[in-house]
Length: 635
Ligand SMILES: Cc1cc2nc3c(=O)[nH]c(=O)nc-3n(C[C@H](O)[C@H](O)[C@H](O)COP(=O)(O)OP(=O)(O)OC[C@H]3O[C@@H](n4cnc5c(N)ncnc54)[C@H](O)[C@@H]3O)c2cc1C
Image (cartoon, rainbow, N blue to C red; front, side, top):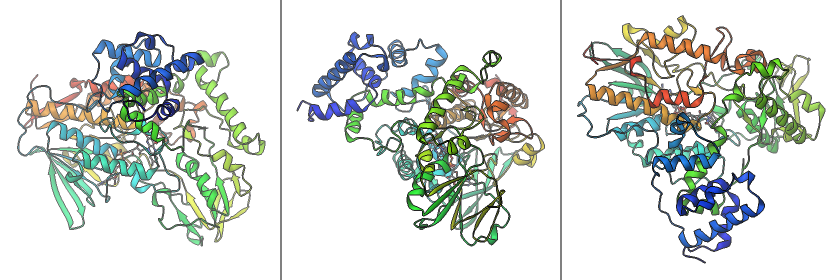
């Protein structure tokens, strides 16, 4: 037993369970021993090098374990550490984009006043709609700037989409260490990929800890927002338990989510069906599938996630597949996070930071994977070398998981490139398909009958419960609230008259001053950046910077110029043409992230991640117009 109060075997168990690169980085940062810097990346270390490093870490921790946090190193040291972490010679753009991901600062990415803040006018306030991840982060951003805000939430607690999705085995499919928010440094996940219940608990905790909860009005739904031009105020109509209410805001931030409106399939005969029809986002708490004949329609992330768990309970499970997906395994998916690893995160200064950083590292540079390489194609390749190699790996995985069953493989193998849709994580889906009580159905569904579903081949599939895991109407941004900007123009009309929802950097629309969207049109980054929850922070920081500018300059409105909006969207459409998802090889005609009617990408931001990130971190102020009592604010 050393100074740490735990024995060496316990520490060794922790070190054996974690990323050795993170151990190396934390050890080097603590000791400055150049021998750690000289080591190759973990996968390239010899067995002797690995063993020696583990011993050194155990020795050091036995004497020095501490709950102290390390301060952020100076820039040169930080760069050296980051280059060592991934073995790259980092360019400035990448260094700036990633440096805060290591989360040494209290509030990484979020905007802070530099020097004395200006006086905030008594009537200046922000209303944030939604208390999912993005609304909570935005609230923390306002709090940091000392700007009065209130969060309006139609649900009963924080959590957003995690409140409504309570289906069997719901959990994150990005590792929790990267899904968590970087300003909450003390949460230790029960599982490597947190279950929905824990994600809800987590966001509730963050909301309470950072003072957001007390500024949130639950069971309040925004029904209509109108911008009053003369007073530069938003008038917000709310549906509340006490009846309709109106409140005002200087600035409106919508954080209403992308997965808010379930897409309901409507096959003929629905009303004749005597069984139960369930959408995963409306899962009845008391639904038992024991001894039932269950259908799962849809094989996106949700459908795939639940099939294994359903098959365990049901008497018979029918998996209805329309479009095959690329489904990949994830290391440690479904596994508990060991208490030894929790201890390491709490007692090895810097380790939590590097563990998160390394967990996110596979996402740092994925752009080439999502783009077409015409030269490679001219030489007979399908998309590009990495994409084609990934396709081969995934094919081998399918063969292994299905035990080489051609009757399954031939039907589940996609004919388009991996990464042209959101990657889906395997939660035992392929294995479930090999069970005797699970049936894969690929004939199209034609209609409901009284006792089941009838497919195009005329076969009736007898069923008690039909689960429609058919996803969400992702393009119904802000729906069903009505948002009216200048001259009473409704945002949905504006979008419909053109070619669907658009925004400037996913956040602003001309004619809608003092309004920002989180997770707005084309804001889902397509590649090369941090995990999603860090993007909520990056987007919120942009809004924070805009609020700061308004307050510093005494402006009453801020708005994107029509020219900047148009130029940005033209550039976006052009950039999107490089994406494999926009080609036949990427299955464009079956991708609901693409608007095939107008031939444009709807949900994703096509940029290389660090470039997109920089648009928020270093706003182009020329694109935005500020006015003071209807007069432009001078330069
Ligand atoms: C099943 C599932 C699994 C997922 N797993 C992952 C994952 O592993 N990794 C990942 O990065 N992402 C994942 N996602 C994506 C997920 O949506 C985001 O990570 C994140 O939770 C979105 O947060 P949000 O705050 O933007 O939106 P939401 O969580 O949808 O929150 C929006 C909130 O706004 C409220 N609201 C909407 N309209 C109104 C109104 N008019 N008035 C008042 N309140 C309103 C809603 O009630 C809701 O609480 C998953 C999504 C789903 C559905």
